[in-house]
Structures are given as structure tokens and as C-alpha cells.
Image 1: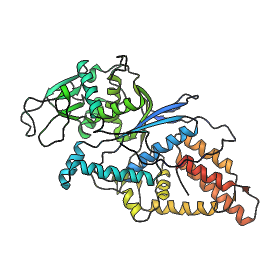
Image 2 (image 1 turned 90 degrees about the vertical axis):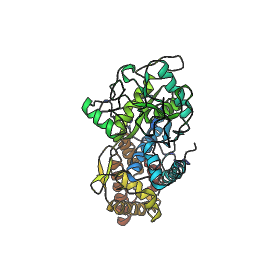
Image 3 (image 1 turned 30 degrees about the horizontal axis):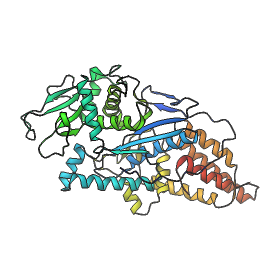
Image 4 (image 1 turned 135 degrees about the vertical axis):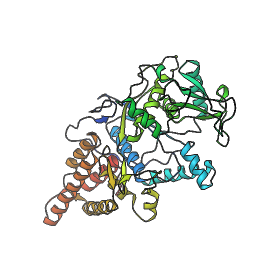
Length: 436
């Protein structure tokens, strides 16, 4: 499928001082570290996409803006980044919403995917190089699940005949996590917590016939009233959630890639299971390895509104499209989001936009002339900030300081640096995606 148009990213000068290589917090090791070798020239990143049954909310925007800044930071460091992502355009929440609204599920998915891409375009988010829908990935998922089944790393579980949607004689297919190369540890999560999260986030730990309560679904056999596809020897059905991302990432990025990213609520089970699937799938030579898949994991904090985590299920949403429709400029939304560190848990308040717009007004006033305070000191500070675990609040504070210094110099009639405004505005655009 086609992604949205890429924003134009201007060239900016090299730093005048030595700026360290990018460091990020790895959720796997739970420490701050460089995720790439100092001399890296290329990297792959996979960011899990949306399930398009409702419009993009600020929580989504915060996640995709965070990884947009990461990609900008790596590219500024000289790394050629290949960015892959997906759209989960068939899944239980989407089917349930379509049933409630009376829409065809395909129409709902297409409508909301289009709205998402328009929101990302407005927010100047870098588009994926590899952008694949779950339905597009089904032939490759069928191949992958067949391979796992033949290798003994997956097994059949007969569909319960008491299920009113069941079709007699069919079986679902589950991954046997005990057969994963290197074991099942990805993140430090105890068994009881994992079981509770699995049940809450789409898993079925109570399913009879499974070898382990945490074994995830790979292929859901055809049910009455549900969309299904030809699975060859697997029978008709549709893919499980986690295997989709593993297959799309492996196809787009190879057997290994630098980072898998998303919101913190994806740590378990989604990122755990998709990583284990990526390890269990053989390469072209038939080898499997615990080194396959994402080498690091990066997660964005969750955004609350009115005291609760912003979520489609709760309905406490601040929609990007609705803000844009009321005349809010995209830069104000970006500034409001970037005012919070990407890993922090934070709450959206309506005044956030007012504060962001006030900042932008001051910045534009400072940028309105040709001269200004030292732009290279500003560039070095912003570059240093984003390389320090994407510290965007620090980067915005640097812009506040530059604007204050510039306006003070103008009012005092002091000499300022010629051409400063151009360098500063290009830095904001290139590293933070803020276009003024």
C-alpha cells in the first residue's frame, strides 16, 4: 500500500563542537545506550502501525512523532534509515466496530487509514519506506505459519464445537513458544503479570488444548460471519496479530533490524511475541537464531486525558483531525507533544495547545528578522538534546532561549549574527519537524 508524502527535510550545518552519538533507552536492557555502532551507516526500524477503526488521537500522534524524531536524528548522524510499518486492517476490534456502525469492515478500514495518512502528512511525520497492510501480508503469513508448523514450532488446536461461529472439523494454529531459539525471555516480566496482560490485550490464556497458556495465535480458522482467506494447507482463516508484524518486518528489513518501536502497551504481549516469531522463522539458508528480529526495543509513554489513558475503547479521545478541522495549526500540535519527553506518561490538557501557540508566536517574532543570536550554539544544543534519548523538551527550551536572546538584542540595538534566522528555522524543521 502507498504511504503518505514525505516532508521536505532541509540541510543543516555540521556542529561546531563535538556532539556525541545518539543514545536511547532500550526497553529490553532497561538502560540508556547507543543502539547503533558509532560508525553505523545504515539501520532498520519497525514501528507498529494502527488498527484503523477510529481516527488518530493525540496518543497515536505522540508515538509516531517520537519515532519521526528518532529517524531524523539517525539520518542527521549520517545513517541511512529504512523505516517499515504496517496497518492492521483486519482484527477483532475493527470487525466489532464495523458491526456496531453497520459499515463493511473493508470500508471502515480504508476510511480510517486514509484519515490517518492525512493526519501524519499534516504533522510532518516521515513516511515509512515499507508500508504494508495486514491483508496484503496474508500470503507471506501463510507461508510463515506453514513453515513453523512443518518445523514443529507450531501446533493445531481444534475449534470448540460449542462455539456458535465454529465450522466443524477446523483447527486454529498456535505458536509453540517452548520451541523458540534461545528461549522466551525478551522483557523482564513475571509469569503472573504476563498472563494477566495476555488476557487483557487480546490473548486467550484459558483456551483449552494449548500447550502453554501464553502460546499466541498464528492462524485463526474460518468462522461463520468473519472475513477469511485461503490458507492452503492451513485451511481458510486469517492471521494472528503478532505474526503479521514479524513477517512484515522480516520481509522489509531482513533477518535483523535495529529497533522495534511503539507505545509502552505493546511491550507485552505484542512486541514479545512478534520478536519470538521473528527468531523462530528461518532465513534463506534454513537457519533460526535468537539474534534474529529487533536488536533493541524503544517504547513511547502513554497519554492520558481526563484522568484516564487515552484509548479508543474508553472513548476519551482528542482527535488530531478534529483539532485540525477547528483551525489548530499542525506545528502547534507537534510543539505541544514535543514538550513532553517521549518516554514519560503524561496527560493532555486543552491549555497545552494555547501554551504551544504562544511559544510559536514568540519564535516567529524572533525569526522575523535576518539577524539573531548565535545560531550554531542553538544548533549544537538541539542536536545534543535529540541525541540524548530524544530529549525534545530540552530542545524546545533551547529555542525559547534563542528567541529570548534574539528579541533582547533587537530591543537593545545590539549586534547580532547575520543569517541566524535561516539556520535556526532549518534546524527546527530538520531535527524536530517544526515548520515555521
